[in-house]
Amino acid sequence: TFVVIASLVICGALADNPPPSYKPQYPEAPAQYSFEWQVKDDYSKNDFGQNEERYGENTKGNTKG
Image 1 (cartoon, rainbow, N blue to C red):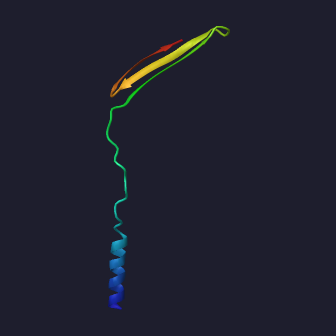
Image 2 (image 1 turned 45 degrees about the horizontal axis):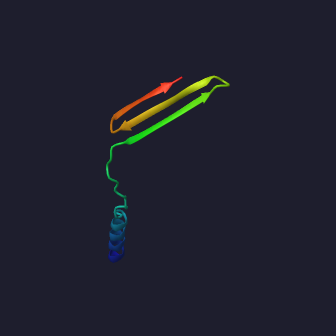
Image 3 (image 1 turned 60 degrees about the vertical axis):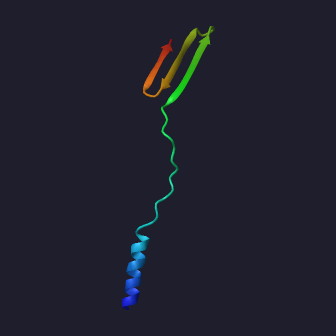
């Protein structure tokens, strides 16, 4: 009985400590993007849009309309 109990304790201890899971490593890179859109419809007289650009922590842009 001692061998059975010792085996159960060892198996329980091993099952409680799973190996670390795989996590892919991605390089850190500053955020960088730019976009622009516009709507101009003479019939409905709609004329509006937006532009924005970002590099790292610096963001600037405008809205129209």
